[in-house]
Image (cartoon, rainbow, N blue to C red; front, side, top):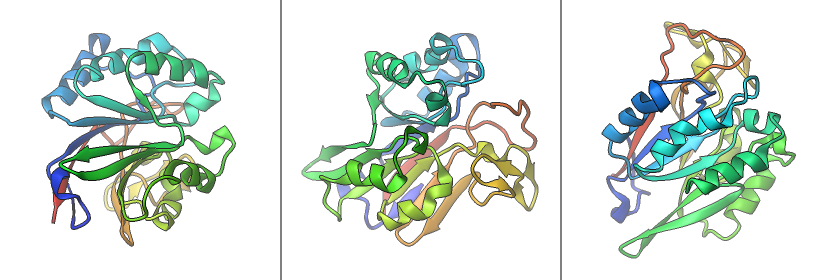
Length: 241
């Protein structure tokens, strides 16, 4: 739960489910187990925070089976991860997702309104696309008031300080795979972009007015095994304090 005075009254109780780092993993026939899990949570919105495919075994048709089910549950918002960029097929992936009705958040924002109150969903691409995180956030938030409540989809958690500097209220991130191996009492062992004993691997982190939830994700990439590190989906409710 994200509890804050900054949550607009009309969005009190809003439920977001985050799906991250699928990496072409399979959860039942045509992803029915995963789809059912998400459906059972009754989300208002679903956020996909990158690496829905794996660049080492690119199979877009198979990867999109989960998305085909998710769009029937709630509005789906998506930002790409480093693996999408690594395929050099970003346009193909964007077009396929868009054709399913997914909202592609490529350095842009959308404003939701309830009973005259508003909040913004912001999404930025992976830095491998050639822009700095600051540039992407400048573009994505250019037309938003400074005091508007902002939800950010951003694949990489290691750039947390930048999200804090931009006064984002709540960030949804992934990429770290929970540290791959979780050592009781210490946390994750290794994560891309952070190396050994990474700082941001799973759970909620806070600095200033910003909180960031980092999903352990669902699949694996070059390292095929997880230890003490189960796959997860995140269920986050907004609560007016």
